[in-house]
Length: 183
Image 1 (cartoon, rainbow, N blue to C red):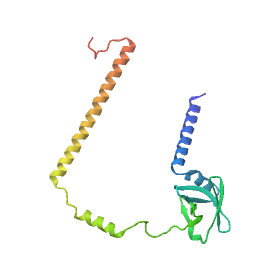
Image 2: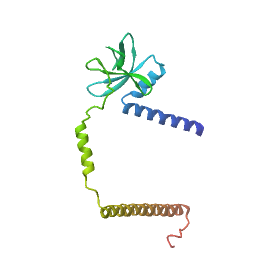
Image 3: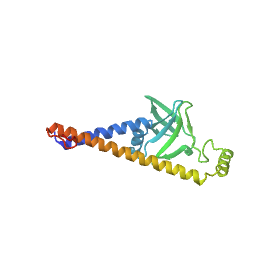
Image 4: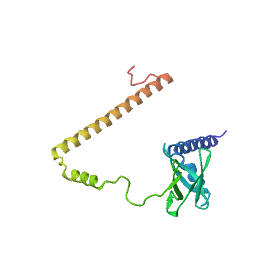
């Protein structure tokens, strides 16, 4: 086969492998999202909150009822009002608690577990924190620069040693005596 065909096959395998890994890491949102996006509004993205975690499946809404399939079981959950529908990644989504079989209405208010008193205390501590003196800052900066220069020098020395070993090996293979050896 031609090199181009090998290239196309290897890149395809790489992309599909990356897609499946990302789908596994995101708990199935990619396949479900593509199903919902391809349906052009006929399906909704159902975010399931289970006792183990969050999972995503494609579902349909029929007469104020969300129909979806999870772990090869057909499930139905009723919707009381349209406030439970929200936009997620450009498609319509609904949030369902699978264990209680209810639709969760996402709040548009403040973030969960927000404690204004704790935040105020953190801000006060940050404002009242003692400032670093300039002598200490100069010492830290010099130490960082020295470590960076040493790391750069070690990298350069390692590269030069590696390339010298490569030249010696290549000349030994060709039968010539290298000039670096001194023979």
